[in-house]
Structures are given as structure tokens and as C-alpha cells.
Amino acid sequence: MSHYNQLTIREAHELLISRKLSSVELTRATLERIREIEPKVHAFVTVTDELALKQAEKADGLIAAGDTNPLTGIPVLIKDNMCTRGIRTTCSSRMLENFVPPYNATVVEKLNGCNVVVVGKSNMDEFAMGSSTENSALFVTCNPWDLDRVPGGSSGGSAVAVAAGETVYALGSDTGGSIRQPAGFCSVTGLKPTYGRVSRYGLVAFASSLDQIGPLTRDVADCALVMNAIAGHDSRDSTSVPYEVPDYTRCLTGDIKGLRIGVPREYFVEGMQAEVETAMRVAIGKLEELGAKVEWEVSLPHTPYALAVYYIIAPSEASANLARYDGVKYGFSYKDADSMWEALEKTRQYGFGDEVKRRIMLGTYALSAGYYDAWYLKSQKVRTLIRQEFSQAFEKYDVLVTPTSPTLPFKIGEKVDDPLQMYLSDVCTLPINIAGLPAISIPAGFADGLPIGMQIIGKPFAEETILKIAHAYQQATEWHKRRPSI
Ligand code: GLN
Image 1 (cartoon, rainbow, N blue to C red):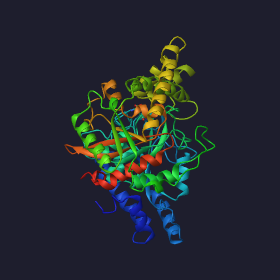
Image 2: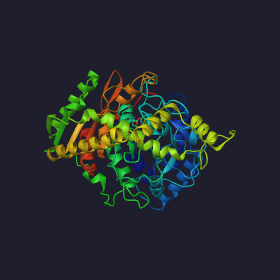
Image 3: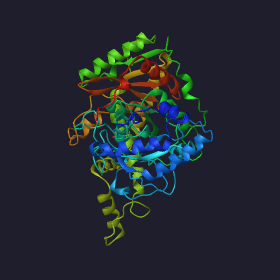
Image 4: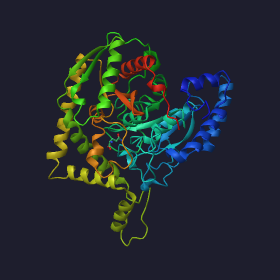
């Protein structure tokens, strides 16, 4: 591995502006690394070599002319559900396998505005539905810490590439845990911002009231830099909020004395692996040592209902969002049909994978006239209760801390035939999306050589508090510096 393959954004930026390294050299080293280990990990759907080298050349010119933007000339990988003009955007689905968007997602436009280098598009669970990247219709991505295990999902490709040195950072999307859970499984830093903080324009919709885009990085300080670039109001996304974007790096003081941390007991669930629980206790103890005030016995009694609520609301929204894939407007189209109805049916039959079909069926059922009140409406009411419960907790605590996932990364194939077991791997992350809150996952230990993630949850739009605590933790620990030897 070239020593350039594990740089943070800040380290790379230092080398670039002091002219010790050019963006073209950094990009070449990254592309070389991709060629070398892709056959083992399969994190990329598309590698954009040509574009990357062109962008790198341009960035070198800008740096020579005095550009000091921290992201200029630095490689980034984009999850394949964010539209990239002229670059295939598949959502890891047969339905969009050959879809080339005519426009960029707002986050991609914003990164382009910082003259970044896009190295490719990452593999994911089809339409972001899954927790292991095994639902990709294209291929399975492997965890670089143990190639027989899953990297988590649905942003598995993005997390793997950051961990394994195939990009400096990546973007993912998180509907119920898809940034945080793979970040935890791959030992990288992953932030799901508050709902509305980052524009969803150009993000292929899964469940619109839950989806949010965020960074996957090598550490918290890098995460703050990426947030500076992607956060903010967008007139093309009516759910994005018109709040000012702070400089997220300014909260990284290392001082967390007196901050109040709650540890909700419902997140230490039955079926949780002992190694995860032990690592959490040690990690939270560390935060206490750093001066935070930890309350160990907080209760959020509606937590056990979050999973059920999520698996009614998310599929309901998905069933509506995915109605657009009809074989007429764009995407896969079944050609040999005798009637319009047959074409529609066959397009969806062949275009969607099993998990996507399962969600569409669950969603249409929950929304159907006879069952709407019993399922969808009821879930919305419980959603409100879960939200309120968090607000009450945040009157007493600045953040809540939990494990990111109840288990270590599991074996490829272990849960594919058991959707309920698969759904359970997100029990700790789903409630956060239901309440629209920001949360980060950071590396917090290892067991048997496998990573363990810690989740820090904040009040709405209090990303700074989360980043501050996560950064202080990383200054006092070394977990985030471990890299898989692949
Ligand atoms: N694993 C959850 C699901 O399958 C969450 C996915 C996500 O956040 N996109 O829906």
C-alpha cells in the first residue's frame, strides 16, 4: 500500500498546498489502490478514472493559483444512489443498471464547487434497502477486516472504500442506519445529519421522511470538513432548512468537561453480543474520564416499538416512491410484452430484487384503505411518541450514547434468508431517523479483530455537540487509527 492511501483529508490537504504532493499523484495512487484491492472487496460499482484524473489536473492548477479550500483535489467516492451527471447511477438495481442522470444531486454540485476528485460510485443494498450490502443486485461487498463478513449496509461500498484506502472519504445515505451501521462494521467515522440539514435533491428516494445524506471519513475532524461543504438550505429540497451552516471545525476543542451524557438502557438489548456491551462500557468510561457527566440508567421506554414503526413507515413511503419505475419514463423497460399492463408488470418483476418487492408489498398493504388506520396511522402516532421521548431526554442530557449495532459484523450469507434477523441489526440506529435526529458512529473497540462502533446522538441541529464529543474521544483513543491489513 502506498503511504498515500490512508491519509486524512487534512493530511492530504497539507501535502497538496505545501506542494509535496500533487492531486494527480494522489489520485493515481488512489486509482492504483482501487485496482489492487477491488478484486477482494468489491466496493465500487463504477470507477471514474478518466474524470478523476481530469479533475485532479484542474485542481493542481487551482492550488498553484492559490486555492486553499480543504477539499480541493482530494478524492471522494459517492454512493450510487446520488445522481451524477453523465455517470451511471444504478442504486445497485437492475432497474437503474443503465441509468445515466442528466443532472447532479445538490451534494455532488457542492463538492464539485470545492473542486474535489470523484473516483467513483459505491456499491449498496438495492435502493438502500438492507443492512449488509448483500441486497445489491450487482455483487456482494466484503468487509476488509474479514473478507468472509459483511461490511454492513446499505452504504457498505462507501464504508469499505474509506477503511481500505480506496478513497480519502465518501458520501453515504442513511434512512435507518445506512451510514452509521457500516461505519461501525468497518471502523470508520460516519455521520447522519439532522433531517433537513443536507439537501436530498438528486438522492434517489427510498423513504423521504427518513433519508439523509452524510459523510464517511477516517476521523471526526474530516467529517466536520465535509459537513462544512455539504450542509445547508437548498431551494430544490423543500424539507431542507434555511438555517445558517456553522463552521463545524470550530467545535473541535477537545474540551467536553461538564457535558451531560445519557446512556439509555433500552439500547443494551437482549441478543446483544457481550463483546459489544463490554466495549461500550469501556468507551463510555473514557468519556467520563474526559470530564463528561455520565448518567447510566436513562430510560426511553418506547424504543422497542421503533423497529415496527420503521418497517411500516419506510416501506409505505418506499412503495409510493418506487411507483415511478414503470418502464416508461426511464430505467429498465421490458420490451416483449403484448400489452401495456404486461410490460409494466414484467418491468417490475425483473427490475426489482426480492427485498425491494417485499418492501413494496408491505408498504402497499399498510397504506391500503382497509388497513391504513391500523398500521400506517398507528405508526405515525407512535413515531410522535418516540420523538417526544427524545425531546424530553434532551432536556436533561446533551447527547445520548449507545452501541451502533448490537452485534459484530456477521458472516456473508448468515442472515440473507431471515429478514427479521437482518432488520434487527439496525435496532440501535432506526429510532434516530424516526425522530429526525443527528447521530454519529465512531470506532470504539475491537473484538476478535472485528470493529465495534459507538453511536452518539444529539438534539436536532446540534451536530456540533456530537462532533465535539466524538473528536475528544478520538484524541484520547487510537481505535480510529487502526487499518485493516489487506
Ligand atoms: N437497514 C435499514 C433498511 O433496510 C436501513 C437502511 C438505510 O438506512 N438505508 O431499511
